[in-house]
Length: 129
Ligand SMILES: [Zn+2]
Ligand SMILES: [Zn+2]
Image (cartoon, rainbow, N blue to C red):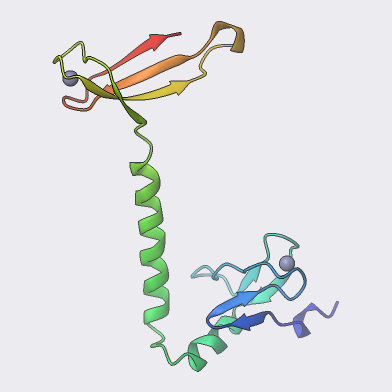
């Protein structure tokens, strides 16, 4: 067991796994190690602290930037979930475009169900194929 002496490769402010070369993710706030998703190599979070010092960034700037990045990713995921905009008449308000989403709710031989959400009034309905 001598993994502690193997340190990640640094390129700019990025760290790469010394074993398989995978880009390592940033350590979580409360954790002091980072585990490589590919090979399971454990990198001490102190490797990242070295980078902070050498890249002259303010210590407080690092965690807040990380938090902002996470927030943005979560938002983007939720926003992209409403489906594809198609020409479909809303039975509630008569609007001619709606978001459609196909879902396989029943068994495969029964086909799928398409969910529509009106782009105007947000009324939702579904059509069985
Ligand atoms: Zn690795
Ligand atoms: Zn509508």
